[in-house]
Length: 149
Image (cartoon, rainbow, N blue to C red; front, side, top):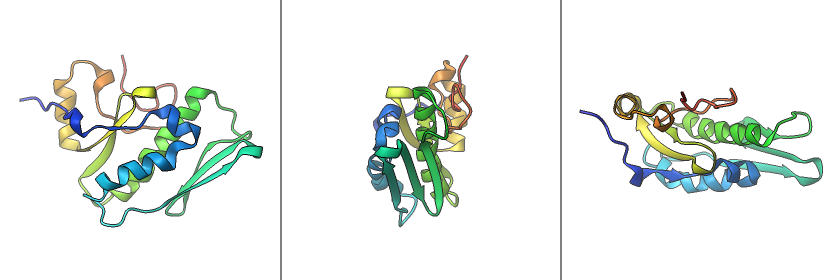
């Protein structure tokens, strides 16, 4: 029997909003869900330097540069970097749990869902379109980890 994703549990994130200095705000919206798996979620610091056109976040001593003049990126790359950073921040905290925050869709339709690897594997067998499969975002463009084709 296939595993149908429960879209009622989808946390809407929107990659564009993440990239436009909204990563910490999105993380705060995830924290109530994260508390089911991690008793004390970490703080996320956001460092925005408008004059330097730099956006940087930090969590548990790990920094994530989303954009700056030193790393030439187009809009899609910035969205990918912000998405990967948010999911990495959450999933680093879930290291001792069987759950991970998996991405669903991408771009403005980006969402996240807490799933086990077994649930992901079963969902991939039951969902005919690869684009609908849960995935862990990466920094490799142009798909940033999202299954396609």
